[in-house]
Amino acid sequence: MTELTDLSLADARRALLNKEVSAVDLAKAQIAAIEQARALNAFIKETPEVALAMAADSDARIARGEAGPLEGVPLGIKDLYCTAGVQTTAASHILEGFTPAYESTVSANLWRDGAVMLGKLNLDEFAMGSSNETSYFGPVISPWRRVGSDAALVPGGSSGGSAAAVAARLCFGATATDTGGSIRQPAAFTGTVGIKPTYGRCSRWGIVAFASSLDQAGPIARTVRDAAILLRSMAGHDPKDTTSVDLPVPDYEAAVGRSIKGMKIGIPKEYRLDGMPAEIESLWSQGVEWLKAAGATIVDISLPHTRYALPAYYIVAPAEASSNLARYDGVRFGLRVPGKDIADMYESTRAAGFGKEVRRRILIGTYVLSAGYYDAYYVRAQKIRTLIKGDFESAFAAGVDAILTPATPSAAFGVGEKGSADPVEMYLNDIFTVTVNMAGLPGIAVPAGTSSEGLPLGLQLIGRAFDEETLFAAAEVIEQSAPKVSLPARWWA
Image (cartoon, rainbow, N blue to C red; front, side):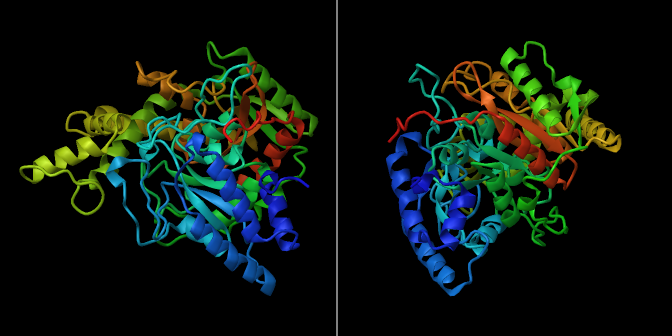
């Protein structure tokens, strides 16, 4: 029999409902796997006692015939989601020890549907990063390694703990968040599936804010079907979030396996970058052929304002971050460093509590919002954002159903290899993903092959607002067509 931890979420759910395995046994298997994988540093907080208690409750509901859609399935929760009675840190020293008295709406939806919490997953501090190296609790290490090398690799960010845990079979799925690519980039780096839903599809209530007009919750999972199952439970209208959209949540799983014959897939010429690695170009071409073979029509499109997306994003996101992070002042919760007066206490607390990357982004954001620079930077960036959104709307109005692009400009890189001398080098990892957040659209990353070094590479599909179903259908075609990506031996165990 397949090891319990190697089952897909869909298979684990089936085994639970058929009473082939108990929720407690499944939880114990995952807890043991987590204990053996601490070298990956994927979890900030493990909650085995909580998991076993929730699993026992799930077994009781299954026995009574009252199983929910995720009954007994163990999941990891990104430590950006508030979890009642369990420490929530956003991977920052300034929130170390903070235990919320309330539950985020998305995680509450998962518990409502019977899921089991294994613990809180590591991330870049306040979700600011593309490699999971900015966490106060140390970097997450990818379970992947280059062929013939033992060098530690990054899992991507900011949801690196989520991606690494799913890839290493430490949980059947994980919550994540995506502000500029923080679901799709780590998914691509680790051979997992990650979907950023349309802005407003999942509630942001109870999720620590980075940039409120860009942040969106979503799942990272092992397969397209697993991601569809998770998103159905995570999504839904929430009156506590004014940006939450009151629309029915479709049965996303039903879209998996749906024919894409006659679907029109756009290929944006602006995503062909100067100096793009040949293996990324080749992967993209292969994705086109797979979709064409499944009956889709391929059309060239133009998204002319793509070139401005990254600089505009790195104005809008830091500006919103500087505002959102003003609340961490040492007065109400979290870290407090004493000072000679309240102003000195504020300064000392924030200097000690925030890491280097977070301080950098707060300073950038404060600068672009300051008198004399607001119109020159922030207002212009928002105008560019409107133009980017208009590019996508024009493509979809012309009949395009989805857009195919690379997910990342390269495979995963080594810990410490990028960004130490020039932060922009790290920011360029988001070049294919930030447009989707700026336009508020859904995007999915799906494994599509491997690099010359044996590392996962992903493709991205971008869809119309609130049309995640089309993305699941097209992504499943790529998943079924692509060569299967296999993890190296469990060197971390």
